[in-house]
Image (cartoon, rainbow, N blue to C red; front, side):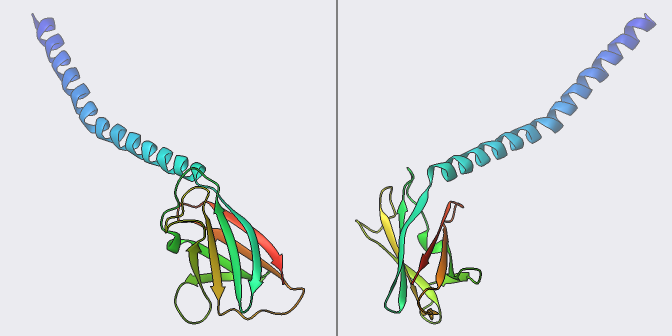
Length: 155
């Protein structure tokens, strides 16, 4: 009879332990699964977002840079993109549309206001002082989800 009571108590303690561990670990497993799904979604979005700088040139007192969306997704938040520009080896991040100093603005060249796949955006870098003929310039554009393109051009 003593063995039966001890065995029953051990079974009850074992079941309670298993339930306690399950209740403690199940939320963590769910959180990890959500994190993995979120990371996979972001990576998928980044792989489907691709841009390419097709041309850059000095246009009067501005630098114009044409950037094409060659991916399969619309680029969201273009104004939140990072633009780096300057002479090779001495470039800096340029602020978006401050209206004074060195800044950049953009315009969708071929249709609408959204940067859809196959559309090209013309970025105008304004307020920059060019250094003269033969200087090589560097431009890099990074869209909000991390896709980027870079390009060199000379005056």
